[in-house]
Amino acid sequence: PIVDADRHVIGVYDAGPRDPKWAADVVAPATALMEEAAAGIYEHVFSGMPRRGDFNSKTIGNSMGGGQEAPSPFFHIVLNRIVLAGLLATQPFQRLAGHTNTIFQAYAPDLHRYYGTTLERLHTWNKKLKRNFLSTISVFAAATFNFGPATVTLPHLDFANLAWGWCAITAFGHFDPDRGGHLILWDLMLIIRFPPGATIFLPSALLRHSNVAIQQGEKRYSFTQFTSAGIFRFVENGFRSDREVNEGSLSAEEKAARVKTRIDRWAEGLKMYKTWDRAFE
Image 1 (cartoon, rainbow, N blue to C red):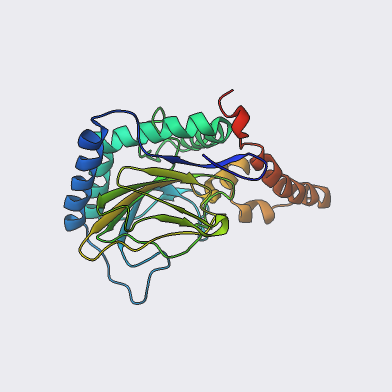
Image 2: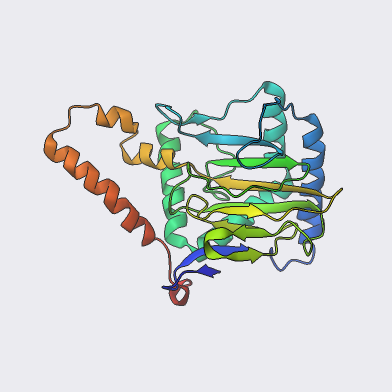
């Protein structure tokens, strides 16, 4: 685990389950599936360097932000949507989602419950929204496939994610983890060896992170599961956007209460972190 000065578990590094067949049954086929999918994905070419790095990526699931009035699916052309949905349905990614869900629940049960309850409420409100995975194996609303071929991120924050929330990043590919691909957590001054099949849970909206470059000719991919902060706000607003609430006929007292609630959310969110000595109570 990654703990702060007060022994709160703020992140977790997981090398994978103690299953001798995990690498052969999950990591290797997941890598092969991403390589195959990358060849079939249509990628629109943009000018300039993307904020997270120079690599092909596609996100599937539901999100809210950028002026949306309600959560909605990420848009894709039909071909890309079929490829991404097909990846999620494969056994390696189903097993990976289930394993990361178990780790999340074990180290941050309150935070995991908050994610699960929020997503359940959202899908009860709008049954037309599709989940990436069954609720029993994932509490995340979205997932990004980083197809590389050399997925090396620049220092960045995922500022659209829940401030105290976790995302789960899993590495894949063919690279020497002793010579590259390490995860750098700049604010904590940590460099973490990050081999294929390993997963890191971290508050990516708070901690600047990036990767060490891999060697020439090597390939690195990653799979990131997350939920945007906008979804949490939408559900807590009674299935209304912030703009709809703010433009409503709120009294001065209600506006003051709303400001206080937004401030208190941070303190309440931090309470969802377990201290290491109580992590498994």
